Amino acid sequence: MAMELQGSCRCGAVTFGCRSHTPYPYQLCYCSICRKTAGGGGFAINMMADHQTLRVTGKKSLGVYRASLCDDNGGRCEMSGGERNFCTSCGSALWLYDPRWPELVHPFASAIDTDLPVPPRRTHLMLRYKANWVAPDVGPNDLQFDLYPEQSIEAWHRQHRLWID
Ligand SMILES: [Zn+2]
Image 1 (cartoon, rainbow, N blue to C red):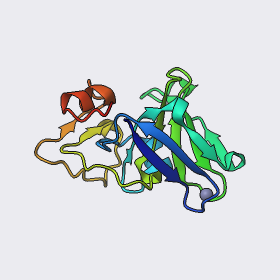
Image 2: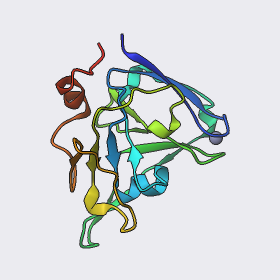
Image 3: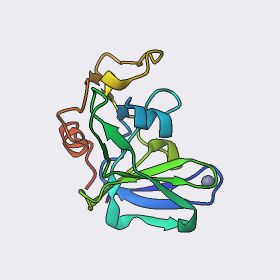
């Protein structure tokens, strides 16, 4: 049975629940979008759950942010397909939904109220974009990537035998 995750914004206007086969918060993203919208410590932790299990109360308080992504030379920019849902009352980042992967939803670990399992090792990604003052806390078994890791969240959980049916 997949794990039930309960989440909320800080002010309580929005609460949500979803089920996840992959509840280990192991993936730390240092990109500027995650840092600025959900990562005061320099990164955000993105999780993964089944979109069809997502239940939301307080939908009228949801805002959606789509980031503009520019290439490294400051040239071409385009609108990200990812829809970052946040509370319009208190500003808490809640989850990312991308219509290109409609079966998934990516809650931010920071919005989850359920006790989560502690990952045995962590993956640090998008380090190319981290702020200069951020000193990643890299454990001896952690993995680090300039951009995206090779492994999906599902593959990581299966490799570590942490996938929950
Ligand atoms: Zn709120």
